Amino acid sequence: MKRTAAVVAIVAMVTGGPAGRCLADAAFLAERMEAYRTEVLAKAEPAPAAPAAFPPVLQTVGSGDPPDGPHVTPWRQRVGPAYPGDPWRSVAQDLAELPATLWDDTVATFTDGRVLLALGAAGALGAAINGAGCDDAVARRTDGHRQLPKALDGIGGCLGSPANQFPIAAGLYAIGLLAEDDKLYETSKTLINALAINGAVNVVLKAAAHTEPPNGGENGWPSGHTSSSFAFATVLYESYGPAVGLPLYAFAAFVGYERIDARNHDLSDVLSGAVIGTAIGWAVANNHQPRLLGMDVLPMIDPASGTVGVMLAGRW
Image (cartoon, rainbow, N blue to C red):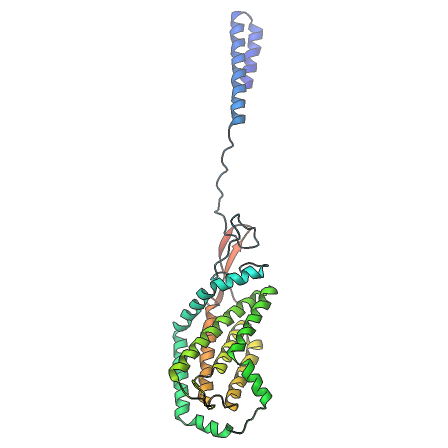
């Protein structure tokens, strides 16, 4: 528009006369139109920005919190605390999610045919051992003839007790959370659920069987100490392998032997408890380790490209 007005003005100067005046008026009008156009554009609102090529990626804590607070990854997909670096909020989130995770592990345990088969085998094993007179034979051999000193009996009774194993699991949870050790943190949560489910199963089975233990108490079968110790060992074995799991299995076997030596349980109580604890510990640990074609399934978020998906991780 400016170029047109300049050309008209030059022609008007050269031409002169009435034609020149008309051309000059046209040049003036063109300049005013250009000025008006510039003023309108200056006052106009800027055009809205073009939409992003990808929708916003769900943010995890630490990647820049959205205005309405940090996004918490659902517990099924989360590895590690809900709020890294904020232990108190993470503990509160875990407590809020505990009923859901505990129920999920319970369903996974009792819908697994292998676990149900193991529980049935534990009952059949206990009945067979007791029916064959093995419990009475072991009782005659150990009654009044303790093989372990009282100090070792005390260790087995104390550390093998479910009431004391829960605080140990809680301590592992605290260490994993404060040390930012995601593996220990996740293992401890699995352990807590496994101990809780195993304890509930033992309470139900004890009430149903209602057998008398050698010490004259009530509800002998199965051995809760033995069952809980084997569940503890199984969870740690599944997470850390033989280097950690085998010593814990050895200790669980020691707890079972101590229960017999102290005449708190019969042989059938201990062997059935070992089978039950191992089966439940394996089921809960397996439910916390998603796999596809033998490989771990892990969530993946690439903050650079905004890609969200899963990845497979395996060892060969």
